[in-house]
View (cartoon, rainbow, N blue to C red):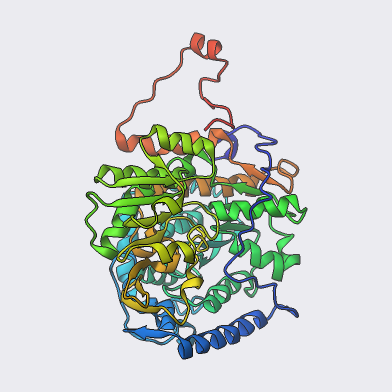
Length: 531
């Protein structure tokens, strides 16, 4: 499928937003340690710092069941996010010597022997991902990504595996790491490694492992990346800070999260973005589908799997009424919850009010609510002061990409006890025996505690693939070093790939109707700014 057949030449597809207020930072800044020379010096320093911090905590804090450090790092031995496999050993994958059946060891996963189970999960996901599979079938002969060498840093699950194998079918060479230390499905990573994909990810990575894995993807022998597919901006951040010369050779970046997009706009505004980037997060087929419909289903799944809670009559406060907040609110209201919304944006607040939700300040309801969900993309939305006021048994979790929304570090003090209940579930206990239930240590709840609906991920994956094809094949000069939106024509194409599943039949404009509306009969049917 040639890109010229899908869309016309779009020059300036979007404008930069004024995001001066965004201050979100990655988990660890690999450039914050002086003397980076291409080695893993920053990892070693970080490890020493973590060791000191952990030691101090062990001397001053009380623990039950498992220590705080175990709660943070032991998840790799738990089941995957779909409740599947478990190794039960405490040996770091970095210390193991593993090879796949082809003799390759260019990967690092929990256990390569889980590959058969992972392959079955990928096969199941393919059945529920008609759009990305249709794109694979239509474009595999043309190989639009031939000679593309893509660094991927996203959640690694069965749905991502379908995307990875589609990119390879379209001609790309890829290396992949995880964007979240708790969201990797170990068996899927093993299946990809068995298929000779260089995968560096396992569930329950430490922060040191996290940056090491991305670095292994970027700094590979006889392999020069020319594209980045990012979710949160961490691969972009590491390359820019640690390998600036290599970063300048990148042809394009595709970013799918609010957090990563904010970082790209910051780089662009500061004049540090030297390559074009595609903001997939604000594509209609991402924000109006993945963010809304996926979260509408997965928030219930996550809370049920981790806490077994009954929703009827529960009081819930959702921080943020963007697309994620809208989806979560609809789901919880439908199950009989009393839902409150907090918002900074008067337009979103008005939407929430007209949808039947009460808009409040967090302090007004924090003493009475049963569940607190963050969905803002911001930092310190729920602070220690808020958590001190919560009633015993209150559940708190995050549905935004960034792990900074809940101030989890403020709970790591000598007066509080952490009790590990099950995978991704901690009780944090106050001196008066009050306890709150914290999910996934404030990280993305739906990918840490459950799984995503494959169908809606197919929509996002197809959008990501088209964005990569567009940037990789764009003529010199079409895209400058700036952040762009995907052309509306491509959004519509992605949607059309998924309509046959529903036996949906589009109405076609007559010539007279098209002239009256000032539209091309084949689209696009809405302007780029339309949401």
